[in-house]
Image 1 (cartoon, rainbow, N blue to C red):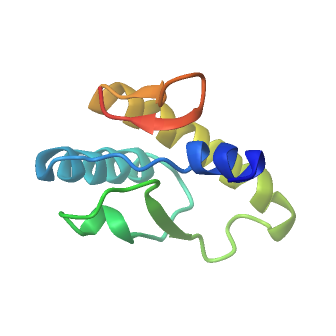
Image 2 (cartoon, rainbow, N blue to C red):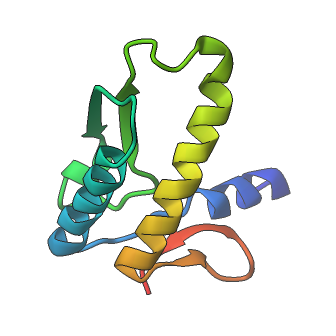
Length: 108
């Protein structure tokens, strides 16, 4: 396998979360987004909702009704990602590395 494929695979390594951890993750996301002004609707979707499926990420769609200007979207998304990752790592006891320095989120 080419080196780039191995590195990409390491970045996208799946994490097995229990049903309780998945429910807690969704609650953490809900609480974090409810504290933010400007969010009208947020939807969690994807693999985190399928109990038997290992997850690589948690998909969240946000609707602000243009309360956030299009020119501000990239920085808004980056800020939300940072806040959610921090709260999920703390709330679920996750570590940021999947071993050998590869990025990702793994169950402790």
